[in-house]
Image (cartoon, rainbow, N blue to C red; front, side, top):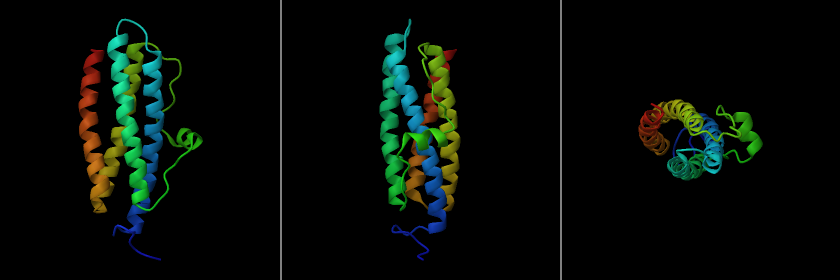
Amino acid sequence: MAKTNQIGLAVKDTQKLAIGLNDLLANYQVFYMNARAFHWNIKGEKFFELHLKFEEIYTDVLVKIDEVAERILTLGYTPLHSFSDYIKQSEIKECKNISDGFEAVKSILEGYKVLLVKERGLLKMSGDADDEGTNALMSDYIREQEKLVWMYSSFLK
């Protein structure tokens, strides 16, 4: 059995990274559906503002879902690809019938908190494995999402 994969990284490291990335992928998929539902179902005084913001979120997350899945493939593994797996794996839970803007933003912030913890774990793991590709993705995601947390937290005050 080879000790390195097709891009020269240690198989023992990439296996752990793929597990972590699949966990992140599952959480992103549920986060995506929540943001999409908020976009569809938002009501009230802040409708126009939040309707657009939730669309920005789910559009961005859709790109990240693809990047994470392709990174798993690049490492030589198979990304999760069924909603039953996503629901079973995800720490972020489905939100149903939320139309209140403040409740939806609170849920978005809770989701980002989960994602950031997972991304920081993957950042450390990928750094230790000399996996610059995964490391760069996680670093970019963390930077973007920390700013979004600040902005959405400010909305709630």
